[in-house]
Amino acid sequence: MIRFALTCDQGHGFDAWFSSGDSYDEQIEAGAIVCPACGSADVEKAPMAPAVLRGKAKSETAEKPAEDGQKQTYAFLKDMREHLKANADDVGKAFPEEVRKMHYGESEARSIYGEASAEEAEELHEEGIPAVPLPPLPEEHN
Ligand SMILES: [Zn+2]
Image (cartoon, rainbow, N blue to C red):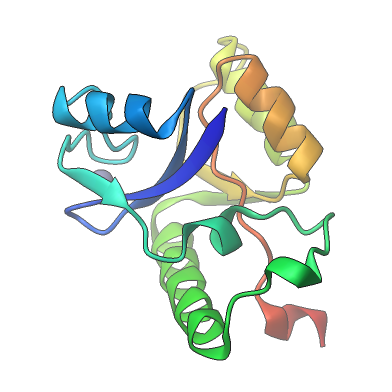
């Protein structure tokens, strides 16, 4: 499985899993991939995808993007956070739990954001729950 970070024509970022790069191409062409935020089928790969989706639990220094890439990633994350703060509830580390509750109808569906480890994000995906883990911004570690 390959995970791609995607963005729609409205600038929403999200991720999706594909069995292969070809599968991605086919599904995009068929309009089968839609933005979970606005439903737009006009989506494409986000330029600095892998860094955005990396869980904070892993430190893979070997795959660190170049300095320009880091700046872009930072700006992208910042934009995404600002968008989320304006449009969704911060549930912090309860994110995987809250997402599950909504998925299984135990609580009302709403827009939320929060933190999930790589493992938690993986589990959510395996349960068929679309979720975008959002790593903390570098400045929040200071
Ligand atoms: Zn969208």
